[in-house]
Amino acid sequence: MRIFKNRGDIYFSKTNKEKSTEQKILIIALAVIVVFTVVFVTALSVKYDFSAKKFFAPDDLQATQISQEEDTPLPQVNGKTNFITLVNSDGKLLFVSLLQVDMDNVSYKTSVLKADTLCDGNTLADIYAGSGTQNVKKAVESLMGVSFDYYISMDNRKFSEFFDSLGDFNYPVLSEIKFKSRDKAVNYSLKLKAGEQKLSGQQVINLIRYNIEENNNTSAANDLMLNSLLQLVNSENAANSEELFKLLVTTADTNITVRDFSLSGDNITVLADDRTGAGAYSAVAEYEGNSLSKESLQKIKGYFVK
Image 1: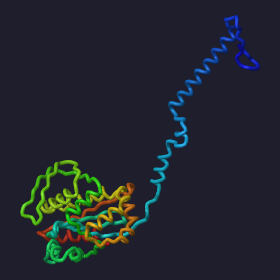
Image 2 (image 1 turned 180 degrees about the vertical axis):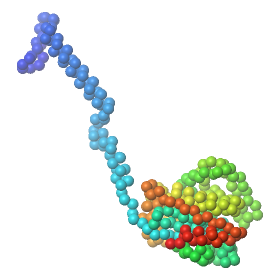
Image 3 (image 1 turned 30 degrees about the vertical axis):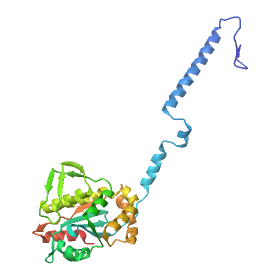
């Protein structure tokens, strides 16, 4: 029997079973080489994936795609836009929220006002009941000395539904609240445990009312509004912004048009991007009775002037 060809051929005798020393050495060397090769290839296959799928789709493919997305520059934006939002229930004003979206430094500024806030001798609630949303807007503009670009007026049920459509909203409640109002134009109740809570739109409305009506704490109401903006203006809602805008204009009384929405596309992209880190500023409304104090009025004006 012959192993190998050409020079160095080894022959095994069919009759003689004893191997020479040279034969033994060569066979042992061959066995060692084969064993070493098998072990080496096995070790490499455990550490590295040699499959065709792995070859055509390497590990760093996804990371490279993510890196490219993160490196995509955000649109250049600027300008300041003022919004006034009125939340009502069956024609009775509950509260007013002022908001500035400041794209010069990418931030939100907000101030929540009581429905009983006096403007030229009339409360915002009375103005709303007598002549509607646009006259409330004019009254606030006259009081503040600043203009508001857009108004949004929503019934509390519609506001709650729209808020809930934006996704989950988590908020830290500092202490347990058990409250039920009496003798209000619109009564409400609130029951919340202390700690991080997922709040519904209706709970947000009631908690704002509780803060400004029972505790005279407009700072806490501002904080609630700012937290909701920072959480809910996100990439998921930005991707669904057209549907959300349609829902807004069909459920609210507003002067925001389709053209206005289209022009704000870059602003939404920037505000909703995870890299942005939008700022938040609270313009606290401080009262002397039902009138805003002079210092508070000047401070709010400073936040909302363009």
